Length: 187
Image (cartoon, rainbow, N blue to C red):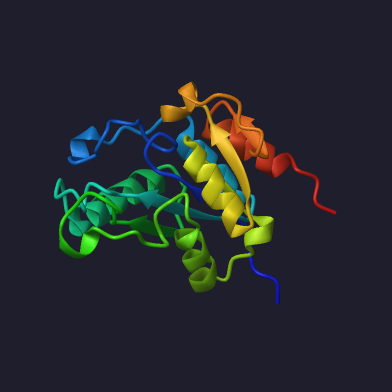
């Protein structure tokens, strides 16, 4: 049985403003059009899944409970506007920085595809029919390595990324990416 299509989204710089380490809920500012774009993807029949590196955990800046609290808050903001995230996956590790078990060269830290592969297995997603949207080359690379199409958005760090020929599309923002995804002819 074929899996469901998905839009995997990086969090910081793609959905919300890039602020360095998002270590306080008060720093969470949703980018213009992002909530509507997520709602559009929901209505378009795609599962929407956040996949985010959170090395601030490894560095001792915040803990996993804070990341989960932030994701619940983000989900509440989305629900108020009729949108939702179907799954949240994060990597708490860093290969060279950090504390105890979090100092690890793991398979889940983007650009490695582990988060996408795990989400696909747990949620029944078809990676080959899915998209990875993010503001950094490592987001695009993680998507491609997982078998999905990578889309670079020109928000967050994406404003400074030079041409990225391996990207399936370079979008101005998440709204542009959602329109492109939903406009692809599927026969």
